[in-house]
Amino acid sequence: QTTLASFTDIGFIAVPEPTGALLLLMGVAGIGMRRLRQGSRAA
Image (cartoon, rainbow, N blue to C red; front, top):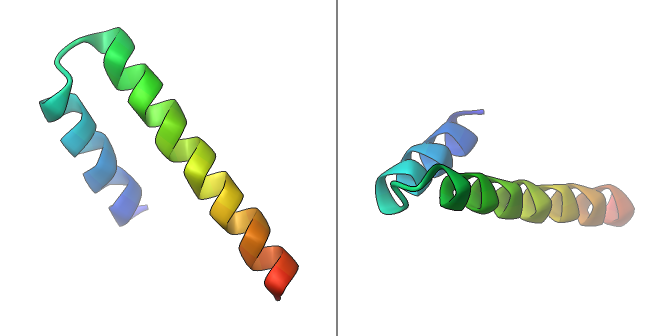
């Protein structure tokens, strides 16, 4: 959760636009889901 919060903070700072921030957050979430799926498969 801490890492996710830091990513969101960076996103908001880098992209002041709300739409851009949402897209960035969705992209980060997508990458996180992929990593979780790969980790579960490996485990």
